[in-house]
Every structure is written in structure tokens, then in C-alpha cells.
Length: 127
Image (tube, rainbow, N blue to C red; front, side, top):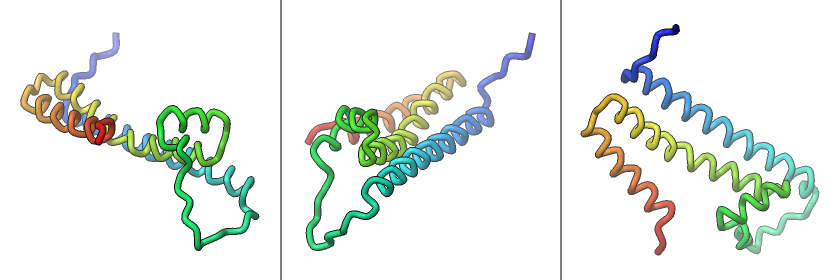
């Protein structure tokens, strides 16, 4: 039987570092793919700098972004990549809670839960 790995500070730090690397790399690849599709489809369109056009309403919700990205719309794919980038540090905090709980470090679990709650409130809370 292989030895069971214990949850040491070094192992948690390595997991967190790998999570951050993977999240940033994945989000960059998704944004790059969306940008490539956008340039392929709209690269020759004239640019009008005098008028600002924000994102359409359907790209301002999670459901709309996922629907747009699943239909291979370039702007939806780019927005999905940005959401993945935002989700990366949130996932890091969630993994930290799990790691501190495995180490039985109650103080850090409580503080990290507070940070996680503030993050979720700032992302999901209504104004």
C-alpha cells in the first residue's frame, strides 16, 4: 500500500499554487480562444471610437454568459474566461478552508470562512 500523505503546510501550499496556476492558465486560454474567434469573425469590421457600447444585457448574468459561450459566441467565451479568472482566488480560499480543517487548525478555518463569506457576499450580494 502506498503511504497516506498527510495534510502538511507544504502540501497545502503546493496545492494552492497549482490551483492558482491552473486557474490563470485555463482562463487565459479561454479568453485567447474567444479573442481569436472574435477577430476571425469581426476583425475587418470598422471601429467607431466616438460611441461607447457596453456589454449586452445577456452577457451580464452567469446564465447568459454560459449560454452564449456554449453557442460559441466570441464575446460569451471571453466573458467566461474572465469569470474563470475571478473564480480562481475564490476556489483558492475554499481549498484553504478544506486544508486548514484537515490540519485541525480551527483558528485559520474560522478566519478563512470569514474571508470566504465576504468574497461570496461581494460577488453574489445585491445592492
